[in-house]
Length: 473
Image (cartoon, rainbow, N blue to C red; front, side):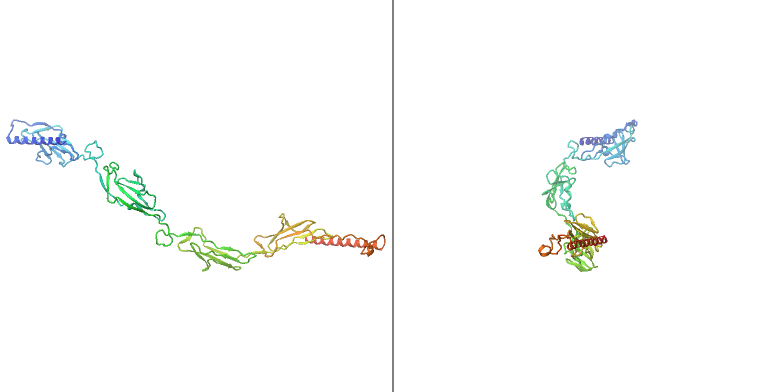
């Protein structure tokens, strides 16, 4: 390429020297007429660029014309003008023109240029060197680049209240060797020792990359500066409830234990409130501004109280938690059931009577047979060998009064005792009442009278009991 450029330059210099010599020698041709000169192909004067040097136009070293941007071609019978004027690589319009008479000894009468007198010439810049194609032109092996080690502490992510700290490059592409991370386009890689497992202290070693590994550094890199650095990754800060001005302050939710209410009963006629002791997050309890923590409050009849939990500093009630309780004294309803009445059997009525009260008493709903649950009313009759247990059923919410009973058991009782045999009268005859008789007479009449009186008495007793039963029913 350089030989070609020198050949063109030499030819131009020879042409110029020849023209000058002819002028000095005074060679003229009075009889010559203007010669017709074909316009040359000026692309032959475009010199190609090299790896380091731009192309150029060989005739730019020719003698200049009187007019700007023109070049003489002595001995060839034309001159060339460039538009714009030549400044280096670029595109130019070249105009080939004739020369006047007397200018060129070889063309004493001048010349007339014919053909393509206007041409476009393109001068290219230097090709430049490339390091990608070893078989291509202007190939130069890429040079290794020095990369200054960055401060990797900038890649440490600070922890939050809930999340541990971390390292930003953990998601970078992994290096070939374990625990390594690539930094594409930055010319280095980082290895951690030990491998990252979470909060802790790590030694980070920065190394360069080899040729052809990173397109941004085809010749590879060498890391300079601080190539070993300590990286400390902190754990999550965690929440605290002691300093509102410090980071991660948050109250701890707490559910205060509720006081225990013991309502009054017929046995224990007072209502009590068992107030809990202080506990974590609960400083205590108050009622009407008075501290009642870990105490028992007794409510009088008709009394009431409101207990409020005092939440400790740094704590707050949990969602849905109760912090205030209102209580009123409980007044129980007490009942003393009326027991059923019973009458034993007699000689004239061999049944035992059990009378269910028509008015069982306040708070008593009804009486039932304990065995069957059947509701009982009126008069019940028990014959020999029978029994029954009767329960009083209280109204809802009613309690049994202290000492009162709500269940009774009745059995058949009474009847007519056996008087034994009658054996005659007198001490000698075995008849102590003198009623025995062996025949008609006064004694026989007395026995008959006695018998009649006894039967009459039995009838009267039966009639009386039946009248009472009917009245009870």
